[in-house]
Length: 165
Image (cartoon, rainbow, N blue to C red):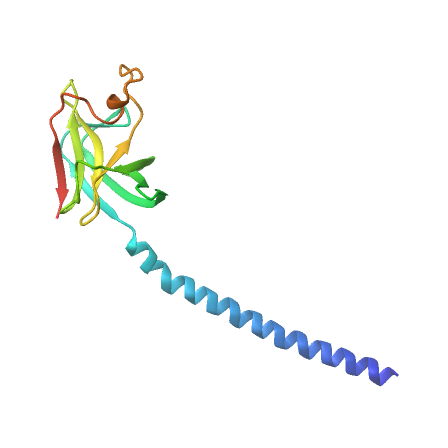
């Protein structure tokens, strides 16, 4: 009877040793899969960096001339995306960017600006090469009230585009 107990313990111990090795191989394989596919996933996201030479507004905040980094981080709907926007080294946040019917496909990576009454550039859209130009859904200006057109662009503004080849 004692030999039967030893044999059972030996079988259980051998089984644990084999399952430990199997778990280790599985963890190593999954780690390699993640490490090898992460750069491809990151490279497929749209991203651009553009230096803006004059002050500009984004979401009602005036920023000094700086580098603007824009990255699409995910789909919001079939025609809208979340765009992460950073000014300098500070991430301003994620905004929803909707496809624009009037802008069409972008020929190059670009940021779309309007000018407000004070003459400041106002970031209103993004365009990635070969993709539809997308207009940012930004907070309304303090004096805009509830007018929906004032939320995306001033009605009397001139269009300016900063592009990245």
